[in-house]
Length: 383
Image (cartoon, rainbow, N blue to C red; front, side, top):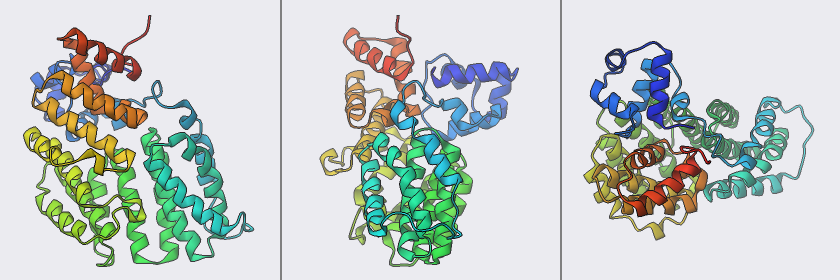
């Protein structure tokens, strides 16, 4: 699993393109592309990845890599069974009921919580049976609601493991269940899951459109769902080069009115809105703003491990953009790795930071830590 820059150079040569040609097709300067390919500058914006992938006519995951060398093999081993569970079921209600519905509802909530705690292998091992069983109870509204939640969990799990098309299948199945249920708040929640799957595929324009459509129908009192969809429209707009400030401000207002920050496992709260503001600032290249926002967040208050992992990564990205000492940046990344190993090591922006640090290796002490992370990322081969 090489760096993104090395991968881009390989695909460019495979396509028979010069740097000048790739620059023209992507709208990115030749000088910046050269520095990316030679690991002198990291790719620090998702929009840049999307532009380069489009110019090279490859998928986003082709460039960022599937991370097979560094993902959890136990978690990865669960993907075929999850795929089978989704592809071998439907919502026609012809299968005899399997399992106690009350226990299935409880299992759905537990697995959603475990995924937020970065327990990917455990969640993946238990999801297939849950999905299969819930599909046999689709004549009951509570089972359909649970299926929306279970497929949302499946979407985020498989997306994190690089199975982006499967994430879309899971999200789409949840949307089907929500439509069968016919409750606007749950339809909007399922639509949010679809936007998350689309973002993994690099289809941010489509994700934004789905979020906007869902906002037209979501109940006004469903502050958490409305807020999550509003954040999605804002981030999608930032990736596409637009102004997301209005959406972020609206989401902040909704967060103040949300009583349960993790209702529907959306982690929607004032702190969550700040994290999205950080991500948007990074997407716009405003590292000072991102760092200032990060300084207002107390990681101890982010009780969910997956959210704390994301915060530490984004904070490190902001400091890197400000050319802060490598020690500070590596310290944040190692904290993130401790909380969420796979989430951290497969993050394309983390990989870019580590690969560029490794290339210059200015201080031996820091270089040792960077080299260790690079080895765990598959950026270095062992002897």
